Image (cartoon, rainbow, N blue to C red):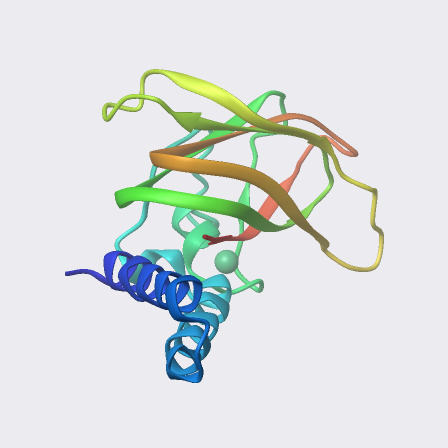
Length: 173
Ligand SMILES: [Ca+2]
């Protein structure tokens, strides 16, 4: 069982136990779930087997893998045109409530979920506009409420400059 599946199993046990018994015995499960969820937010998605399977730009010094390495210091840079796009594939079907993204100069972003296993059909789950930042990265949490998907597509529709960069994407169930 991979870490995504294990996390989802533990969360289910914790929630079910709490709902069913409302006793202290479920507290361990709840705290384990909370811990796992919080580590998931900050962990590198690549360490869970996620991959960037498509990106509209591939600068050798700033490759798409930098999006999912868990570090804000490394980044993927766009080509200087819009729209820009990248697709993250997860090793399993995912329940995702929130996507966290660290970026620079992104203005409008649309997130879509894959509705087939081959990354060909997508359906929009969020469409948002980021605030402009000058002396720090843009840090945004986007509510997506996806119940069951293996792919997320990120469409950067416009920017505050010709080039935009994506430093880190993480997800929370
Ligand atoms: Ca990075």
